[in-house]
Amino acid sequence: MNNIEKTYDLIVIGGGLVGLASAYKIQKKMPQIKILILEKEKELALHQSGRNSGVLHSGLYYKPESYRAKNCVAGRRELVDFAKKHQINHEVCGKLVVAKNEKESLALPALLKRGRNNGLENLEIIDAKKIQEIEPFVRGFSAIWVPETGIIDYRAVANKFASLIKKINSESEILTNSQVLKITHRSNNSIIHTQNRIFTGSKIISCAGLFSDRLAKEDGLKLDFKIVGFRGDYYTLTEKAKHKVNNIIYPVPNPEFPFLGVHFTRMINGEIECGPNAVFTFKREGYNKMSFSLQDTLDSLTYIGTWKLFINHWQFGLKEMVKASSKNVFLKHLQQLIPSLETSDIESGRSGVRAMALGRDGEIIEDFQIITKGNSIHVLNAPSPAATACLSIGERVALEFLKKYN
Ligand SMILES: Cc1cc2nc3c(=O)[nH]c(=O)nc-3n(C[C@H](O)[C@H](O)[C@H](O)COP(=O)(O)OP(=O)(O)OC[C@H]3O[C@@H](n4cnc5c(N)ncnc54)[C@H](O)[C@@H]3O)c2cc1C
Image (cartoon, rainbow, N blue to C red; front, side):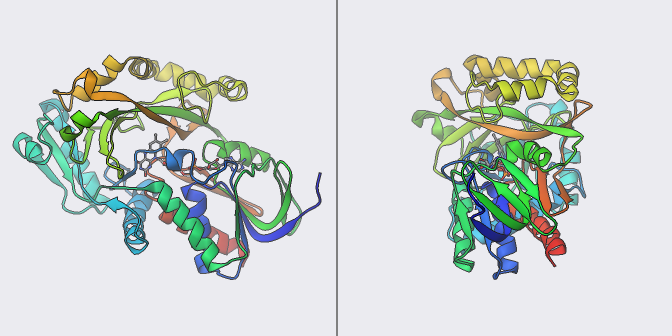
């Protein structure tokens, strides 16, 4: 292999929102340091950060005092300011969380209280009539109106972080088509090997999304969880049906699962998306129903947590698989919120895969996890709302980095 090419103060692995926001925060605090960002794809933010629902989450759902709650609320406020300052397409349009019947409506006061505890403003429980003033095609018993929720162009955010990093320090670099394969450490720095190049960095930060556990393992960390992928498929509303959704409409979440349920979102490009479902996938970056990877499958099936997940939650898993394989079943779920939707109103759209940390007990670990060891910092679990929260997570990572660097 080649000789070591270049030395940096910091090497960040992963060009998604979390890696880029972390690098941006560090570069702002320390303009003089040289940062290298390595991304395996040909462009930035092609995985979770570019395949999500595009929602600026309010912070309504998350356990008070958790990192998800704190980072979501603070991160959203910071991201909205960032978007305003840098002219990134976004809109704080508000959303409805709709209880379709009286039984579901019983969950709303607790959700409202949680939202208020998390620092959300102007939340309101509204009745069926008010629901229809906001979303005329939605039928519900009652709803929570969440005015602080919004939509944003997340890929534009990622690319803006990248250009600002370069603007602050022209010696910092962002290399795409650069997959990190190996990490080795010396006493005062670390060596990073890609397919055909070798770099040294005083410190390493890994934000590798769906592969964050593999990089941690490569770096010698022993983890008590594994990253598994849950594919989410979307449908889009056809031109003639778009008028049925104004902004963002969510169902009341099932507290037993870490997913928010299929929802309607007006994307920043004007499309209306419906979804995503949540199907366990045997290819971490597999975006269609037939995607398969032998390595990822073996990795999942030799892990006790996967089997416990299947046993504990087989009914949920089965329902999601049926929803994924049948347009009619998917439509029935959507009709629970908008009964007038017809088969011809929806067409198959894109998919994304969520990286979720699965414990050995078969339960999903919900909160963000950042682990530091030696010269390295690993962001190991950054599920939704990590896109909303990226600047706040980036701040946490930057503070960890400062402790190590000084
Ligand atoms: C379907 C779906 C809907 C979602 N909806 C929302 C939403 O509406 N709002 C919200 O806030 N959050 C949402 N999320 C969550 C959010 O998108 C993610 O939490 C966030 O994007 C995570 O960012 P990341 O940088 O950690 O991961 P990623 O965006 O996946 O980035 C990781 C990067 O690391 C790179 N990489 C991996 N291995 C290597 C390697 N060896 N060498 C070099 N590079 C490597 C990958 O190519 C990738 O670009 C959603 C996620 C999904 C999947």
